[in-house]
Length: 462
Image 1: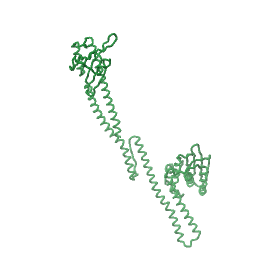
Image 2: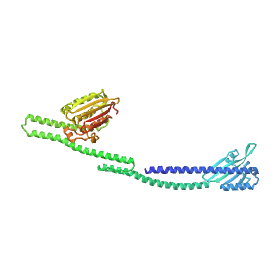
Image 3: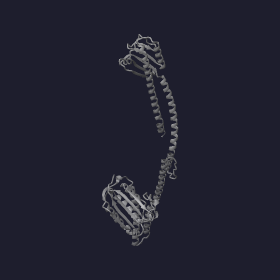
């Protein structure tokens, strides 16, 4: 984050300074060439009428040429049409010398030339001296004018120093601001990290209270919700371990007591043997159910690659499930009602879906009232099929409806133990429905019955 602030704050400033200095240099050079060109034009107009280019000595023009050269801190060389040097402000050449260069030759063709020698800091402007006769321009000479750019370079150096000082000041300010802002921004995140570390070390207590930006506060709220959920899961896990240990131990204890009772009675009647063996069989069945639920949950924790998909008649599947559960309903005097609105064929895993729907209907029967009812309905549209399981039972309190699909959670622990429940049925059901890419919702009020709505795609998508 600190690096990002520096990049965003400093690099654009460097680029802006570089562009500004380059633009100033280009503009200053162009302005100087324009001034040189104006002076050459003025000198040319003075030289032509006086015959200066024919080696006539005109002190006034010599003085003006020297003045202009001095103003521009440079040198001026005048050449006539014969390439004789008429004037050299440096005094290095006389009228017996000639100046032949590419730029001078080009000027007699009517072309001007500009040269910027950055290494030696000077400009060279070569321009023809033209005479207009009968609407024709004739080149009668050339002016080669040098001008120093040290004044421009001095201004550039001064600007560069000021830009460097300004950039350093801005950089220091940006770094200080970035450090301050980054620390302020990351401080709440550090608290979250510390809380995660505490949870990793096994300390689940306490909430995180972070004040700051709304996004950070949302993270804090979400994190607290996660902690609360983890605490609930941990509590239910511990409770499950305790309950399952008890549930697994209870049938074995009962079986041992019954067996020991028989062994202690050498001449026990056959009827007593039968009675005790029936009790032993029931305890074994109870133990078997707990183990099967645990195994089912373990299997469902695997990936969807274990899905055994086939096209199935859902109407027939529900009829088979209801037929299998009807003895339990009769035993508790609960009426089973099935309603199908249309034939439904869908791509499902028969074993898993049968287990999930069986859990829903069996729960509706077990947690019902005497002379109650359970209604199961099936419907479909072009994309999904819908199964609704409603009952007239004891209902589910609103404050725990979000918990009932968690593993090992049981609303009424005492009644669940009486009915043989392990708290795994709804967790299994939800897992199966999600593996089919479906959804399940519950609608219930305490003491007013419960309705489960299941929605599953007709076509399975791997």
